[in-house]
Figure 1 (cartoon, rainbow, N blue to C red):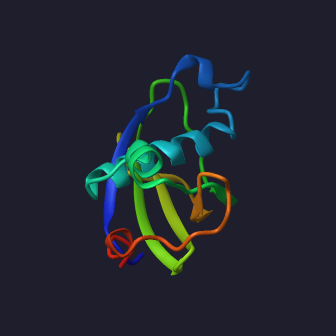
Figure 2 (figure 1 turned 60 degrees about the vertical axis):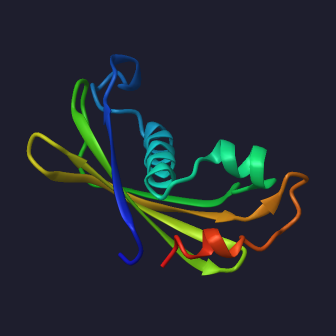
Length: 134
């Protein structure tokens, strides 16, 4: 992976597991968002600052997740996140979900985001933001 990397941590809650005791598959996308938010904070910005101060958003336009081994209730998971620029109006975040107890990669995936203004029209990312995505 290229670009800057950061890692957020989540613990699988009881409400996030299914009848088999595995973390429900859709939760991984929410955990990807945790990774994204932590990555942005590590770079010195937040979604709130982008929207409220800068007037732009990063809606998800594509998402993918490869599930490798199940997470279970109370597993502590590290969401390793890397951001990279695809074009001046598209970025990609890549994720690796690692169980801390045994360092097993339980899932990996990515999301692609379009840069838009608050009305949803495509917008180039500001130069100060583009440099974050090496």
